[in-house]
Length: 414
Image (cartoon, rainbow, N blue to C red; front, side):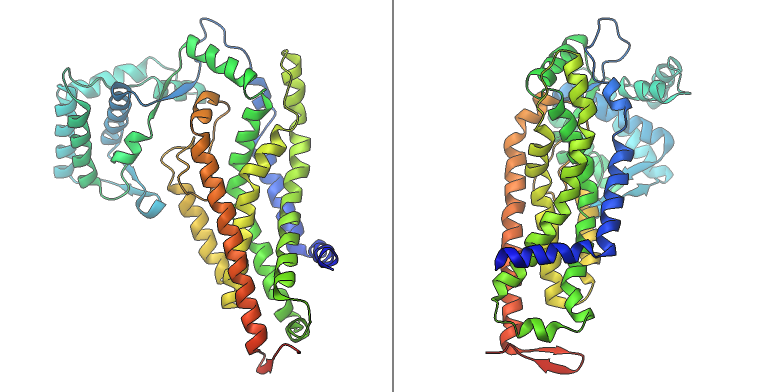
């Protein structure tokens, strides 16, 4: 009986225009983010290259140098990016505030502001910034050396003063500094990272993480509409009284609907990964690496499935509770807040709904953060089950006590 209900729900979903919009938007978003040029970037580093990319560093000196570099550039433009409540807010300082921050830069560098500004200008003059590669390289390689003897604790105190001036959500707060900074990678580091990419990730694992990063962004929103549509379908069709009178348990009704929606929401992910992974499997083989042919599937199950389950379970819960589309607004806000609350695009998992790893590689760093990642996904798997269990309770309560539909009261037939 339960399997029949799930199959019936799946067929109903296939008749919904919302589902086909879901599929089209998902596929277009993913194909626009993961292009063929990504394959070409996976190659063994050679000595003497101009750029080997970046690596995350938590070394106090590196954090101070890169943080001061960012602060100098923001002071120069008098434009500061802050993220209060997870949303971007640009800050422009008045003359007094700008003078205060310049004095903080001077205290950290041991140089007057004009000297620091001249050094910055000389640095960027050495790069061709007319193209993206040159502009990015100039940013990556720019750093400001702190004065000799400046301790990290003293530096942190100065950054706290900057935060007080800029307000909430500053890029100089303690948790941002603890997340580390991106520094230029050396040839030795690039070689070690490429070996980890081949040995641990088998090439396809690294690309699968990037795939899940992009897919996670769109899947924080799209399943909401599937859940809300399904929960409101009976009322819209004016058949709630028939469903309420059915002898099937509330658990079977809600669980079958939920399982069908989770399955159909995950189906485009499965179909997409088996198509998109082909070029990377071929490329891995061409450079002598045996690819992990199940990497995309394994990462998607662990990374994306708990998120889909949570988004759908919460939409079921809120929609069943309120019987309107309020869930869309609440969950879209939740998804956006999760995206903007990340201190970094590689890690910082915490309990964020959208897990980020927006880089090709950083294999060693990901392996160090795997435990935190698994805790994050396990939390949302449990949250999904809890939310759907509460939804069953709400649904059963309505059946017992009756539900008002278009001015009439309908109760479950006993």
